[in-house]
Length: 291
Image: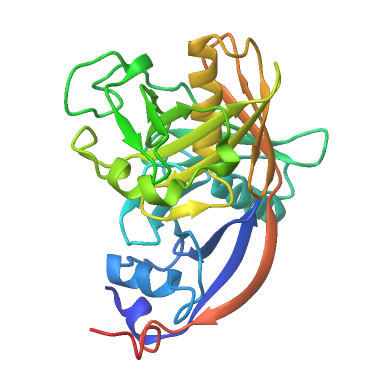
């Protein structure tokens, strides 16, 4: 850890997109390299600030900013749709512009202010081949060889695989509200099929333009919203022929609108809100946590 992170209080902003929440730290001028332990301490909802992901803004040669994403368990993520909107809102407020570019491990993402006042993000082109999704074995990503059984005996199988910054497996089900996804999320996330683990989604089609979605997010667990999962779900539904155009993806925290354009790019539109600002001291976070 560098001296800045170790020795002084760090200003942060807490933001959320449909309940998917983030602690955002600014390392653009003074380097800030958080360890996995640091991220876990910040994300802890009892002993830290509490969030799904910890975000560090860093300089970029290819965009307005590079966005480092650490999950609540300290692991790294390649992209996150909801926080991209949040960071874009910060950048737009700083510059007075209606657009921003954000570099992630996955791609350089472009964000604009939508007519509704929400933030629209071009999430790039989804990767659909088995090796691009980072599967351990060659198979058809449109019907992967994966299944799970819930405590009540119901089974799900043959999800669609999509990589849009992170590996995703999307199961289509008849009654998503009644599923105990916490019971199957961890073993599916860590299945041998996914060397890098995966986000696990359960989607129910509600007509031609609406999909209800619940997500077990890699490194974070059940979240109120997952932007990349919403994008992956629209792509998966189109690949299965379950919808023909864009759709509203209804997550626990609200609604995202997702489009998959003819040029292959996926556009995600939704809100981004600031919750509060503060400072944190890594030296004191986590005191009292069991070793």
